[in-house]
Length: 113
Image 1: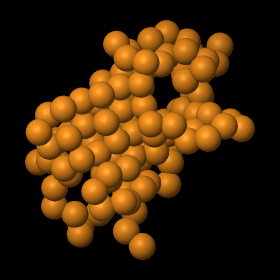
Image 2: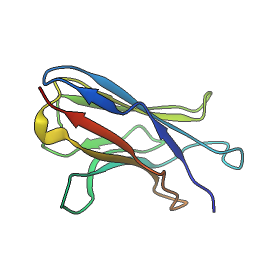
Image 3: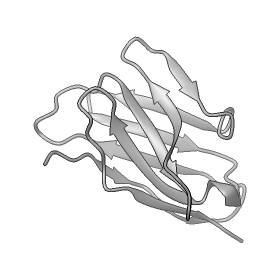
Image 4: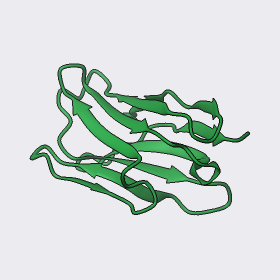
C-alpha cells in the first residue's frame, strides 16, 4: 500500500511555530492536488488546507492567516508552516493526495504550556 510520510510534529508552547513535511514515495513523481487534514482527540478528521497544481489554495477558517501550505515538487514534498499555534491546534495531522487517494500515517502536534 502506497503511503505518504509526514514528519515535523512535536510538543510546542502556545504562540510557537512548527513546519510539517509530507514526502512522496518513489512511485510518485509529482504532487498535483494535495491537502492537510487534522484529527483532534475524540473528533473527526477535518480538512484544514488544500492546494492544487494550478496554485489555488484554500484554508479552514480556524487556521487562516496562521498556516501556510506549499508544494516543492523538486523535493517531492508538501509542507504546512504553522505559526501562532494554539492549544486547540492539538491534533494528529495527515497529508492527503486528493487525486490518488493516498494518506500518510499522521504526525502528532501538541500545543501546551
